[in-house]
Image (cartoon, rainbow, N blue to C red):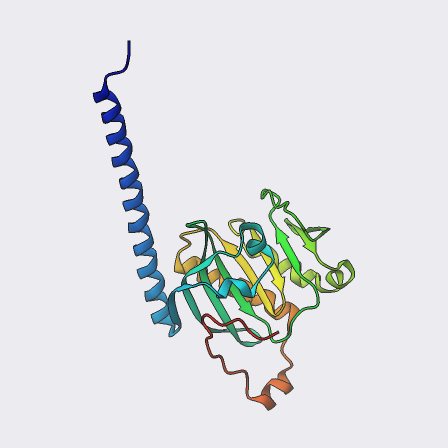
Length: 233
């Protein structure tokens, strides 16, 4: 005996309503996150941009290599003070295939590092094509690096201690070029991102201590946001 047509119609209708409800919920959450991020940027005197297709191309490692380049959403750009001075920062939703997979937090160093270091939680299936070399445990994380000898010089007890403060909700912390980056969970609150910025700033201070005398002579670096522009290599 065949299934009546009205049954199929009812199933399709229910599925359609459920799909619409999910889309509406996602849109509501995104709108709320956008407003929250925008208010946070305004309170800090930072710049806000809803979408940036170029910004994620600044990085190639860590969460970018794992998820893909994607798009930057709800981007906050500014500068903050660490123990060693003022540093440029970015906070952005990293979206790939229409889904926000993480909130990326970045603090900029004054000098680029000669090696890429990725610090992954052991609970993450971090294996991927062209994975850097495994160095070994660094505190509660595993280090993957592009050059073993150079990485060993940078991974000091101070760096391990600072990395341990990051928190178990951050899947990966990585050092690439002149940036220290971290991937926080989607929908992380501004309060959580503030703490993460401080912790990532401490890591930047460890690997890139300021030369106080040189900084005084130069008067410090002036930060100018550059949405949509990739820095010259």
